[in-house]
Length: 422
Image (cartoon, rainbow, N blue to C red; front, side):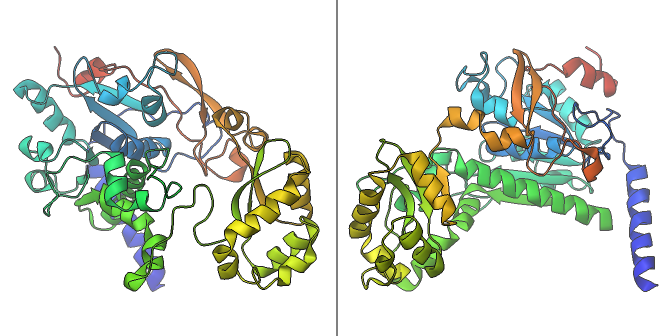
């Protein structure tokens, strides 16, 4: 009975809170939402002063869940990520990836009239996200401290390279630089030179922690009606992801050595060449799999108890010798034959795909994971967000998959909603 009353009180509190909010009345819609439940964040408005990858990636996740995202951009040029390349019918590949389902509002925030538009917009917003240059949002009066008196329920998420305080606060930060500061480059490559991760992994990490913290803040606000500040650091996000190599080198132990595409502390785990000039990826996780691999794939069951290879630590220590044995066995097989043997022995394996292979990946096709979105340059394919479904019977929501906007495309509509006319 006490639990029931507690839940009922929370729902009443949330209902009263929502009834007092002035939500911008833009209806939620989705090309894939027919027959589904309402999206989880439908009715939530996010204003984002965003650029590059970290903040736009965060807000795109919120848009996928149904939130309304108003992307504030510089007039004319917009988010500088729009000009990284022209690979998608003239649109930049990074921008295409991180900016669907958003509305673009072009404002010059150094102009008093445009700044007033933003402040009026924040009166109706639930979340403010920003990843401007260090100190820029504070100079614009957009810090949580400056906003909380008049907007006590507003959630303010600041994304930066190093955080809102500390000796590195004002230091410029880009993805590669954060990878370097966080020690990522010490565990990548082949040992001859450091190699960056091939995607913007520090930006992605920061964007995902911003996204999950905003979801948590929305849940908390539903309980007490209060907003908060969220301080997301790219460095801290990346260092969290470096937990394994950090603990591996605990108490001044040697860190993992760069091992190319192989695993630094598990062997065999990585790519191996086959007789047709291709490569296959495989991984051995335990001694049972190692025995199956020796007998069912290599046809050399005696290797399972060979004193050089009888534990993972010994296999890592003698990896060069073991690699010669494995590649020798694979040299008389094609990649297809090798994978067939691996499958037969229940050994984890994968193809070494390039991007063209991924576009046509059979598993993604079979699970119907592709849809289409509109852009200023026409229709392009887009992958459905992980976890979403097209099938209403599964009880899920239809992910919001809407247009990628042009710079300032929604100025007129948003200004009309705010009763501002120019």
